[in-house]
Amino acid sequence: MRALLLMLGALACTSVLADKDVPSQSQVDVCKDISGTATSVMQARQNGVPIVEMMDIAGDSELLRYIVMQAYEGPRYSTEPHKKRAEVEFSNRMFLECAKYRKE
Image 1: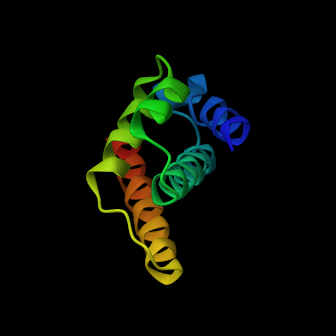
Image 2: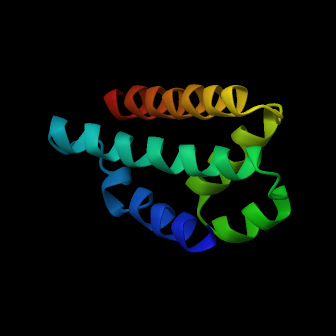
């Protein structure tokens, strides 16, 4: 799982994030990448990975650190349906935040 998170983090933290003036499709793609990263982070959170370990994985990436902190502000659930719902809702929220930021 650690390798998956690192790969997703690298994908989500490309330089295109800093450039709000890229074409619309690219903006959607960037937000999809962030949403996917958020799903992985929330899966880790729901599976009991300690926040300290997740922050170590995030390293110096402000974006990944933000996603990790947001994920750990929510509760950890014990049933699979609740875990899945938390993942989907968190992923959607991170997509929306990205889309709003990139629209400005």
